[in-house]
Length: 425
Image 1 (spheres, helix red, strand yellow):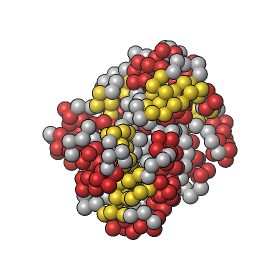
Image 2 (spheres, rainbow, N blue to C red):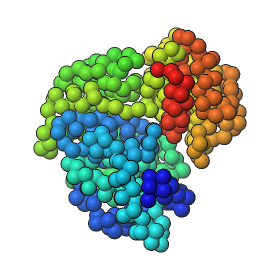
Image 3 (tube, one colour):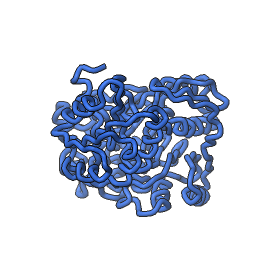
């Protein structure tokens, strides 16, 4: 198959939907020779900050000389971003060959795999083919029954910030959600947690004790410096040298601290990671779509926050940088999200909202989103397309203004393409 046919096969409707259980992923991986059994992992779960934390860990491991795989979702521009080795995306040719290899097994399965399960199996085989030393593996959703959880005990299990998201699948309470995320904790493994609410920490303490796992909390008092600029964050985490972390967002120093804590555990386990590797890796990390500055006049920010806790953190970041300004928000939200809780955090700083809908099945219709946005007292415009919405937002902001596109990672590529197609730098 060519790349077009390969992606059509991967995204085929027959794989759509979410089905609990690990049996299908295990069946596919067994057909491929169980590549996951021959790999080492840092496994990362959580509600917010998974991707940024994964990117920080992978960047440092790469600086330390380890051939490093990185598995994340969703992608921003191209599907190939989801499987990387030392920062290089899987090539079209590699993806085509792997899909040709897995196709007869997937097609023959009586209980068809989901799309994410199919992709996870592809990724495991790819990382083995590329002879990686370690894989930084981001959970898709939850933990216990996520298809990435077919692995044995990881080198380190990392659980980032916990909040309310996917409550239908993971449970209605914060402890239900934490319990599901804690599913990545295995017997006799090392665990790093973001911490926070006592009831959440209690879940991780209990599950770690049940598995004889060693639990370590990230110590945010180590953050001795955090100065926010549009170029990044002047960050100091004791005892490492200060760096310019090329990420924006008030939440990134804590994500980086979680990553550093995990890396220190790896070092204690024998991985050769120097203080310089940690500083150089953090200075080199790249993670698009998270409070990313696309342009300066007006300032145009692309942020993939997609649940109440994430949007709250984005609102805090906006206040850090633009406390004296009102903001034009370009908004797209998946139909299953808690829109009201999300918008409540940004409504006080909104000059206007522009509602858009990317070409994604789960996205809320523009009219329904506009109706919800209209309840907050600011003008609302319905964008006929993402491109039209971006153009309208830029026009309304004008010179010296601020635009923030927010609500979903799934429209990041559309926003980026629409912004740059206007010829802006």
